[in-house]
Length: 203
Image (cartoon, rainbow, N blue to C red; front, top):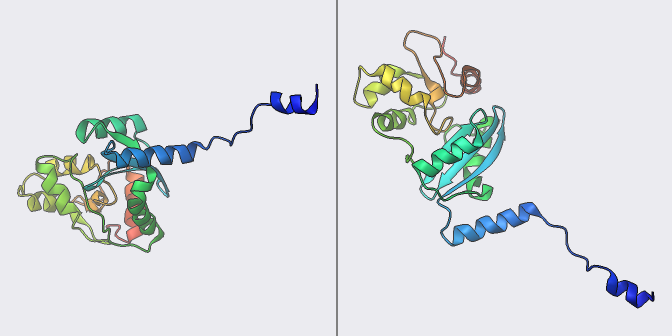
């Protein structure tokens, strides 16, 4: 076989497939075509990996890794839109603010919130919770009163337990009037960490 024949028989060289770049391009095209209503990505944090999801209206979901990714995506598909796409670049603003919070350089989140996954009495409770400042705590009863039902402390606790946007909507800052730190949807160890981070651990 001549050298020319060997060259012709050789398969053409091709660039290695870049899965990350391909995913980015597909996400960008889907966004431009209006095919993605919810975008999500992952964030490494001191509390483990977080799923961060956004819509054009704002931050809609933060999930600790104790929640299975498929369950979170199903919740988003059923509660917001079935057009959910992994597009980390669309979550950059939220992830940057979360990184600043964990680094101790950010004390107030400036992110628009999409309340699509929150309904009824929980809306008032979580909006009141969002106003509790960094380094402070409030009680379940106070959140219930802010939502218009002063005697509904237990219902307020239930709403806080299923808060779809923990950390940014700081349900960790809500504690029992009787003392202690109370429960937390992400686990009490995470609640302790967040309160310690803010210097707000109750006596």
